[in-house]
Image (cartoon, rainbow, N blue to C red; front, side, top):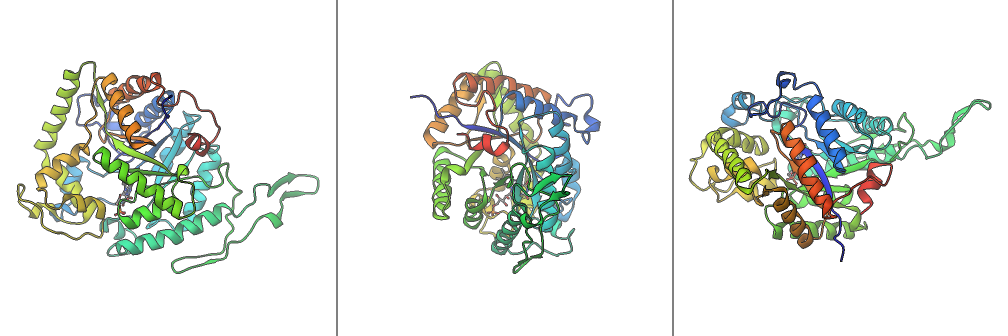
Length: 433
Ligand SMILES: Cc1cc2nc3c(=O)[nH]c(=O)nc-3n(C[C@H](O)[C@H](O)[C@H](O)COP(=O)(O)O)c2cc1C
């Protein structure tokens, strides 16, 4: 039987910010990280390799949860600085024709009308290639930049996000597809009977509508979500066209995908319309030994900079991890931030979590392209779909080439991933298999 194809995407971890500046291949333009050049090279490589999409991670604060200071974050460029992902999308669109582009735009920070308008505009200007990574912000530092002391309680964040997504999709649907007539003789630019106010009055938002722009090529651009907690998963299975997650072994992957598909079906959706993509950090080289040596060096670096990993854990949970002994198991803790992450850490030592965090360890995709492609093939066969979300928070141009011109061509040779884009819009390509 022929292999079922799976999807490929790339998570621009740590957003539109500096990448391999500490590595051996920083590029001679490393000081110009705020220019889009490295990301344009990535987008071109991804399109050569027929990836489905790139997600641009985002948050909007200089974190300070670790030791109550922003110093560690600034020292390592850890989750800061970050430029606006929506601006990067417009640049990436100029050098690609098919690649899906997903900025992260938070329901905790944008007003719904502004977000609906921005994504609609991006969908028009990319001719139907944009998505929305729909997150609820978890870091209190970000809340403090938008007039609040803390984020809303976790469950309420998702209640609010439900209303948000409902309003945004109503705004996207407010113009009927044939509302624009563009008849100079009548004259009639748009037919008023085909443009509808939304008159939304909910618990959190009030908005008259309609959007002041016509329906975009995809109408409802692709929605991406990464809720890991049960409440987050419920939200994702109602709204998302694609769900991204970080399962640490095959059994977890299978379970997560089965859960999400069951929840989607219970919400009256076709589970095949929710593509679940799993984080993976492949590291390939010409021999197994060379690849393993590079992974060893990466681990050694992480071990030498545990404060960087601990600061990330603090950022995700608003808990200061400098207060715990490095080699003693973590006690029961509460977070209003990333609940699903913290749940996996309790009982482990901070050192163990920090080391695993550095590579999102779990499945170790290290080796030759043949070896790693074979692993991916076996895992997808076992899990049943729907693909991988590659990430590397400190990637450089060498890494782009290794993945896009080394690993992916091997996946293609095996008939596992797409070799051409068969449809016009991002959503159609995503739903094609
Ligand atoms: C692959 C991946 C990407 C994510 N990207 C972002 C992001 O860009 N911005 C953000 O605020 N949260 C991001 N998150 C966090 C999720 O939105 C979510 O808060 C987290 O998975 C915890 O789940 P929960 O909210 O259900 O507890 C991401 C999570 C994952 C697994």
